[in-house]
Image (cartoon, rainbow, N blue to C red; front, top):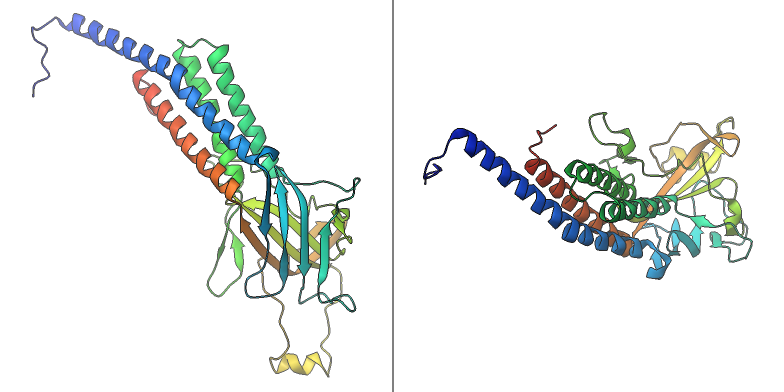
Length: 329
């Protein structure tokens, strides 16, 4: 197959014809992007926002530890808030109240009770809203025939969608054979050459949940932290002790002998052993740490949709760079 133009034309005329053809292709692509692609992206983002809004209804999720009675309960999420829930905690390092089989905590339904909001979901909805604003600006206020303007808007749209997906992904964890579960490097701590995403997740010890959220109030030596990781709701329960507390001395009788014989229950090892945290104005250590999670179908659907939208915008950016004859960075 030949690519020779017949009848042959002069070199200058061929270059001019190529430029005119590329200009027509760019004009067609910008028109298609303006009339179809942006409308499709807007519909997808609106669906993601609906999945995270209170209009999607209440979602009740089970939060229970595997193969143990350490954590048993459920929570109900509506939009970005936890509106109902009950937890039964049985920690090996904290004695139970007299006559109780577990620490019973219920999310308060009082009118003046603090709100239990998930900051990551709030941030995700804000990013989706920003992405929708970018589309509206691109369609109604900008110059649809200005390729550089459209390229800049697509870059901004891509960043908002990428950050929204990264916020839902949050921080994951892996189980090391023979060792505790350790967190994977958060996306905010990636090497400089990789894109960084602010997930909106606050460290558990810097912004603890208000203890009055629960009825009865959460004991001061127990920390509860709710977050989002891989589109799942994650509850981390920590048993705390003062950092300056004297080390426990084994008794000659009772647990001391049982410990030497290997019969006494041992505290769970975890990735925060020996670390000191500032928690509510005090330096504390984590004696025991439990992590349970529950997959949320709406969050999974939203993250999958955002992944597809991110890919679609990336393809549009690549196509536009091609017809604009931009070199790869």
